[in-house]
Length: 291
Image (cartoon, rainbow, N blue to C red):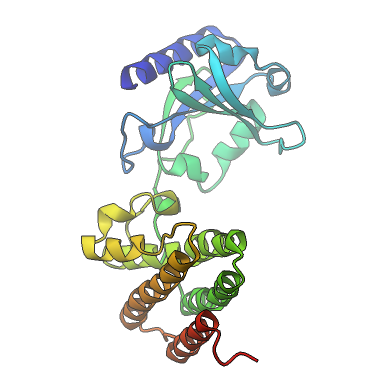
């Protein structure tokens, strides 16, 4: 796949060089970043600056210049925000290319901003620049993806919301409502609360100068095997009793991470809230003290 990806990139560059409508080409994301790991599954992220973007958006046939398209996601005209458009393509050789398409004017607006957009700040390489559109592009700082230290208010909000949402899960499990329970545990509790807790925990020991990439991709790399097993325990099957087990695993890991973070950041940990919610969870699970 690496060979196919490299050949695809060369093909795109050659095509863009000979195409008057393309005025600049950038490579972004992991393949252009100094801090992101790259493997054989890494995609090509290509930004194209068009002389006439409106015309380009009316006909996607140019995507087939680089091989047979087997799957594609294209923004509709309604979704186009006027700044840039996306064409995400999987080719027959299994190389995936995410094309971001700019007009010259919108590209210049982005380039003139005081801070780089996130997809440039994580790293970029100028592959083609026919009109020197990239001459004033600032170097990447990587700060947009570095995990930020939470303030006391943010920390308190995450901890409060975490324990609050556990009550919804408990009621869903007691009612045998698996879909809603999974929505709360995976969409809300994991993504909105547990992921930030783990990010803060990891970044705290790295002086707030680290990224774990999107949605915890690199968590396992930075956590002890013991702690990773505790986090793994928050994942459950479709069986209701296994989801109860995972719910209490959530409670245990939130306590462990939350209390350590609170101590080291000198913030307040909601001790009484945790105690009361744990009592509530046990009552719901056992259907006790319920009228």
